[in-house]
Length: 211
Image 1 (cartoon, rainbow, N blue to C red):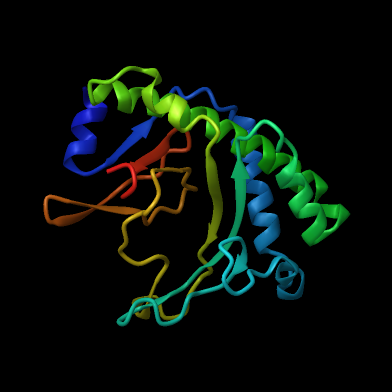
Image 2: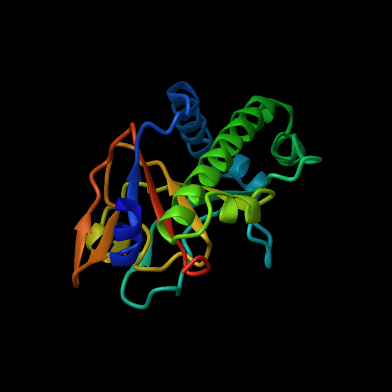
């Protein structure tokens, strides 16, 4: 009932008691920090190519007219198909070299945990809509997802920038884990409201596709 009400009103809710290992979450954050602290020449080994959705990218100029996005991202694909159990490890080994083998293993495990969590959330969404528990779980069972790491560097003129501007997610479901810095806001009842960081929780929002 609570999930259904949240989705009808604004599409966001927090999930706690999710069963994802806190050590795995901490490792994911630590390896993310390690990547973004690399020299630019090293990060560019994973440079996103034109027309691709995965790889390393810095701020996207021109997307928002009034304020420049100020961020770096690293995106990579995850698939839950049974014959693709090591593809994230292979992706980073091929793009970044042998030193990134452990990096790939951590994010392989993290993405698998997120896939499991997403299917549990799909059960709740099904129940909230009055269909069976298995309805959406079965539909999304062998899902394709994009994992994205966002880094917002310190900015000397923060009034001229946004980390990520106002937007809707086009996907079916987004699961976000925040660090302790904050900044995420949701537009509810005609005003922007902040979501306070909670290391024990995941922020979930349904995307345009699921709507």
